[in-house]
Amino acid sequence: MNRFSILVGDITRSRAQAIANAANTTLLGGSGVDGAIHAAAGPELLAECRTLGGCETGQARLTRGYRLPARYVLHTPGPIWRGGQEGEAALLASCYRSCLTLAESRGIESLDFPSISTGVYGYPLTQAAPVALKAIMDFLRDHALPRQVRLVCHTRETAAVYRQVWNMWYAGTKEERLPEEPETI
Ligand code: APR
Image (tube, rainbow, N blue to C red):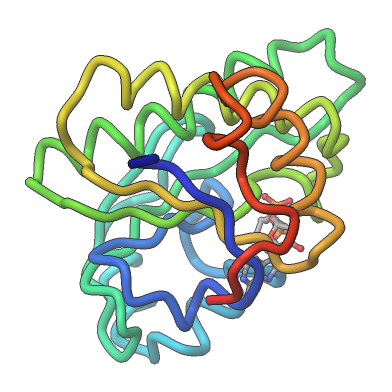
């Protein structure tokens, strides 16, 4: 059974134990998925984030989820795309790896990711997808936790890019290919 899958929808509705947040280094909220997560979690999330003193790009910090269905939020600032020659790929991979490592250390069994850095931060989706999927799949190969990792894409178009890359690189057989019609969250 695949420990990885791709969904379409609003990650704030996720019932995974933890969701990752495409944050910024202040951890004080923003627009995009960061804004949606803070709006759904309520003011207690910002209050806890204020105590963290920010987070470096590529690192991750854990908070409670408050009014979200998810119990925890893993905040990770992705790299801003500056053309691809400034270490963006390594920093993006580090975002996924840092969240997975933190989740494993806390015994978290299910973790949902948004498509980090591919919105406001301008990381081209077709370049982000192979980096993100390699970081996730390498981690799952070497670790038992989290048991389940999902990528929650806001649009079907985003999901199609990740699914195409995953099917090309990680589907050993036709049966293992991710379905054309992704589940909605
Ligand atoms: N659920 C799932 N995915 C979402 C949601 C949502 N509710 N809202 C937006 N997204 C998707 C976007 O469509 C995009 O594919 O999340 C992906 C990441 O886009 P952004 O949220 O813009 O994040 P990012 O590109 O990493 O930029 C981060 O934006 O919101 C600010 O404070 C944040 O400064 C930081 C920057």
